[in-house]
Every structure is written in C-alpha cells, then in structure tokens.
Image 1 (cartoon, rainbow, N blue to C red):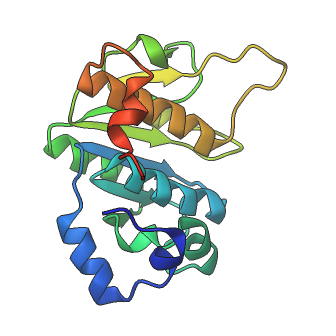
Image 2: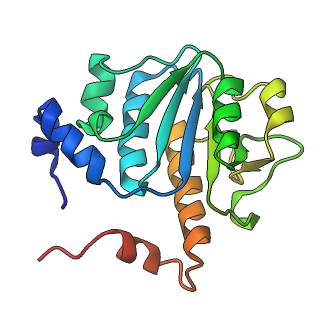
Length: 193
C-alpha cells in the first residue's frame, strides 16, 4: 500500500502502529551523529521509510520527534519508522553490531573508499555526521569501513540528506545484486496506473 503525503500527515497513532507492524524492512540501520538540522532529521525518516530501513538512531545533540520541524519534514513517516535515541554513536554502533551489522561511516577521510566501489551486505549500518564538522576521529576508528562520494567541484561536501540518498540506494543495489542499476527504482516503486 502506498500512502500519499496528506494521509501520512494525518495518521492517528493507532493507524500508524498498524502500518508500522506490517512495514517490510531491510537490514539497514541509519545512525545520525549530532545532525542538528531538524529538517534533515525529518528527511532521514522519509528516506528510511523509502528504503525500508529497520531503525534510525538519533544520537548526541539530534532532536527527536515530536519536534514540529521533524514532524513536518518527515511527512508523518516518523510514526512508521522505528527510531531510538542514544546518547552517543558508540552506543548505537554497539547495538547494531549485536545484530551482526557491518558499520560504514559516510565521511571524507584518507581511509575512505568510493561508495560505489564497496560491496555492501545485509545487515549494514551507516553513520552520518554533523553538517558542519562531519564524524569524529573516534567514530572513524571504530567503524568497519569509511565510504565517500567523490567531489569534483570546489565545494567539499553535499547536503547530508543528498549524500545519504546516494549511499543508501547504492547499498540496496548491492544487496539485490541487480545487473542493471536503472532497474532498482523500477523494482522498489510499484507502477501506478
């Protein structure tokens, strides 16, 4: 079932819980480290719903629902996606590792690999950092691998939501081992007649 924005914004808690229980998920975990822009956090809920992520971890100084900006930007999906607050990213990483997840930092560093050159497998967790400062060296030391999006212009980085969309859909593509990348969206999005 596909729900439009009007329906999602007006879901009562009982209906949202019903949809949450029937929602199909992938073994993908999204971990946010001190992401301060509440509209970005709301966008992460929309992305998490779109890809079927198992859980979104809001860590450190991240705001949490029912912050009105998160509610607005998420278009109601904050009610459909499982989320958890953790005081630190290290706490979230420990939890996802207990599920057997490989942990990827999405960050530019000397150790980072091109995100398209990595083979992702389920379960996987992806750590996204603060819009201004990125991820700390402490976090980069404990993840399994760092991946980055090549940048060819003068700007050093993309918006965290844009970066997340690119990397997470690449991971889905890798999970499903699709021979043709363009067929990924066709498989994820049902035809509407």
